[in-house]
Structure formats: C-alpha cells, structure tokens
Image (cartoon, rainbow, N blue to C red; front, top):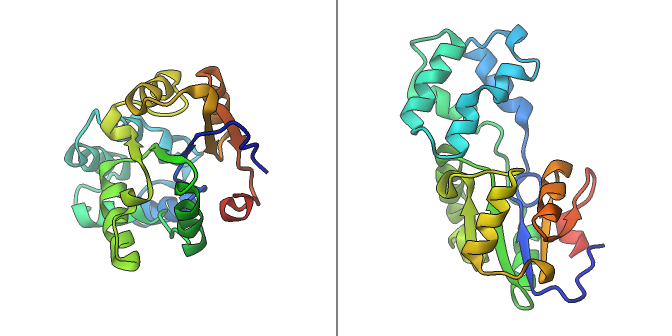
Length: 206
C-alpha cells in the first residue's frame, strides 16, 4: 500500500497504471505492414529516435508517419494504417480506476504525467469521452503530456518541469509509476514515490 501520510498531491503515470497497454500488439501490427522481424529486437520497434521525437513534440505526426514508412520499407502505407498500428497497443481504462481517481480527488490534488504523443492521446481522449460521457482530463487538477511539455520520463528535467508547472511541493507529493527508472528519477527530483509493480492493481491499492 502507498504511504499517504502527509501526502497532499498524487501524480499518476498513464500507461499500465491507469491505462492497459499491449506493446506487442503494435509490434505485430507494424510487422503486418512490413516491419522486418529482425529489426524488432526491441531495437527499431520503439527505440528508433522517431518515437522519442514524437513523444517530446520534436516532430509532427506527419513527419512521424514519413519516418515509419522508411522503417517499414513500405512507401504505400497509409496514414490511417500507420496510426492504427501505432495505436494498437492502447487498450482500456477500467471503470474501477476511473472511480478510484474520482474518490481520491475528494482528498488530494490529482495530476497526470504521461509519456505520450499526439496520435495516441488524441484518439484515447475521444474514446474515453464516448465511453464515460465526460472528458478524461476532468479526472485531474492538471495533466502533463510529454509531447506538450517537450520532455519525457525518466529525464529529471521532465519531473522538475512538472513540479514547477503544477506548483506542488515535492515532499508532500506522491508519484505513481510502473517503471523503476521513472521511480528513481522522480525520487532524484525530490518526489515521494510508489512503484506499481506487475500484478498490482491501482484501484485496489488506493
């Protein structure tokens, strides 16, 4: 259980904390479009700089798609095919996690800090509103997306920027993430942390 004594703010990660993900689904979808299996080690799959640059807002979705066509060696791949393959990893945000956030919001200031990109978040926000009838960002006091703040976890500068933009005091702020590297970076930035390990359910812990 997270230690919430003296905590006033909670910053949640999105993927695999609130949102279920399946990275393999996108890899398989890109393979169907022509990505060479030998290139997936997980090297080119998601570590090519194009993915980092999209997540930090350094390139546009159009520039992303152009580079993906090069990786696929498939100049005929359409924008929709590329977007669908890239989005295939995005699954669902279970209702119990939505309810948990709503309950927490009555006691704490709640924030979101996600490494994401314009293609993913745009469609996710539309789908969430269609399912739940209200805007996803309404669950939070403020949201921070890597492609908008031009910095991503686990860069300590990203955490420092979120702390500055939100105005939270790190010593009374809990950061929740599923990746150890992000947890360590958050601690270096002065935040309290909780590492949501595999098998843990956010809604049960809070």
